[in-house]
Image (cartoon, rainbow, N blue to C red; front, side, top):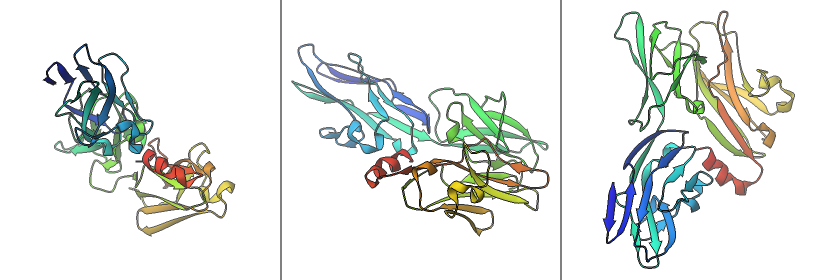
Length: 309
């Protein structure tokens, strides 16, 4: 798409882009101007207006995640670690010593999370589809998880599964496994599964934090259940000396577990997981849990909060 005026022009490679949460996107762009003028400033923006834009590089929400192409006449914008809040209309504006020019209407970026759609039209099989809220601009490969464990060599967005009522499935785009879809049942709603309320949480040193999940076991009764953290095996946090006197696990309702950690320290920064065990099944998955980031200064909290969105 090209917008030009008196030898000034901005060209966008595409005006509609769909990308998966957690990935990196390049918004392709080039511009031109008369050879006699000098470019003083180049800006990408989503806020402000066409005459007084707010540069993305100064927006705390994009801190450390955006870069502009340095190639001559290229204005490609790169955004890393995409969040759903990045969905917006992006515009490029350049200022010269003669006039300023904004490329309209801009580029609409939609950042999508994933979900699994289950089709049970067939009597013994379900067709699972890894869906996004918009049509992706590229053809990614996918990873499928069954009962929390990765299924090898399943890189298609569709997967056929046996209608076993105990099984749950989740999907992710290869390279962005931290942003997998919630686990869903293939039949009824009684399968084995764990879904976390938040994938990322930020907190200040010395404060308290609640990390929650919902869970279900196909088989009863559940013999044991506990929370553990990455990098320390699967030791129950209530028995971990590092957390002595600082953790408690509560269930305010059936099927919802909450881990509370008090008097947080920076060493508490980690990924936390929930597991349960029955006589013949144990949920201890390779799916991502909840990542906690603890910062030591409140002035860093805004940056920490933005990182965890």
